Amino acid sequence: MTKQEEVTKYLNAIYQNTRTAIQSIEDIIDKTDDEKLKTELSNEQDEYNCLAKECENFAKGEKIEGLKDNNWVEKARLWTSINVSTMTDKSARNIAEMVLIGTFMGIITCIKDKDDHKNISSELDEIIDKLYEFERKNIDRLLPFLKNK
Image 1: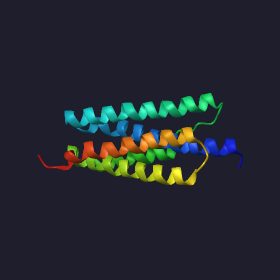
Image 2 (image 1 turned 30 degrees about the vertical axis):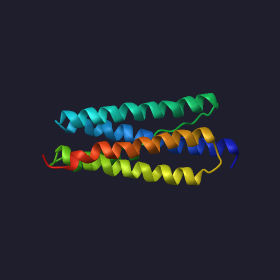
Image 3 (image 1 turned 90 degrees about the horizontal axis):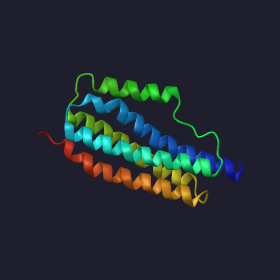
């Protein structure tokens, strides 16, 4: 695999991680009436969009074509999972739990992707480190929603 192909693969892994979060929030945000949770999710979505934009700008700067969003099967799976999980329980607690599970999955993905792409790109390492740190902070902001009111 050429260096350019390795960089593209690493970039796509980071981009897809951000796009999964963005899509999940889009699919779930209107399921809750809890305004504090909606605000938190909206703020998270804004930051994920900024990180996705960093990936897009990196691709443009490196003349990388082929930046890939999640495929339609992955998008359909996310949408179905969210809709089934909120069919009978639209509580802030349930929604926060779902988002937390996704956030933990995002963190795991960051750790694995960074390890799988060692010494490929220090710029991409910086982006994935930002994503990782952001998701770690999201956990702290979402945990209070798990408590019964």
